[in-house]
Length: 145
Image (tube, rainbow, N blue to C red; front, side, top):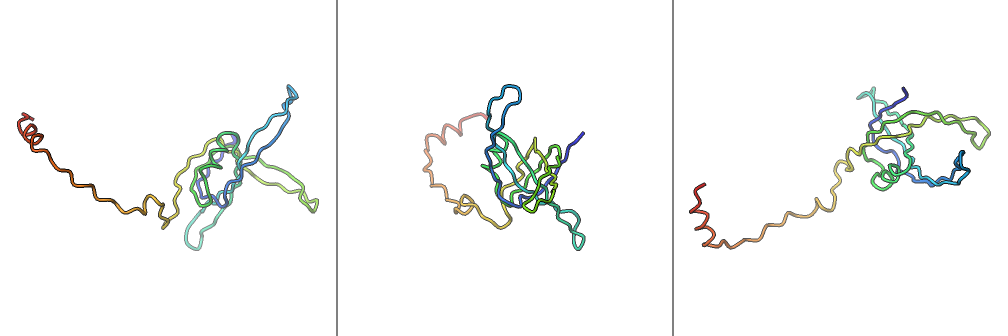
């Protein structure tokens, strides 16, 4: 079984890309979307604190949701298989990058400490005084319960 579970904060804003590929069975050209971002995950504490970075790829509708709702600093829980991608860089060197292809994502929070959202910034408005109807009070007083 190939499954990795990582909890951390987005180190960069998600990037949504559109890809074209050819269906091998039908030869049809298809389009899909992929969202890429990096998660920073802390391990240890104090002088032993270490930060690991994980590249994440999220495909199709889940990827679109990530691009729409996630931003740098948001905390997420990601799970999915890990793949090793090989590529040749500009200097013709063979490079390898490990990537989590997320099949499940949980958005854990979307606030940074000390940041106040516009809704929280509004002062609580005092409710307007409601004039009580004496007839209603009399009816309520007569109820047996």
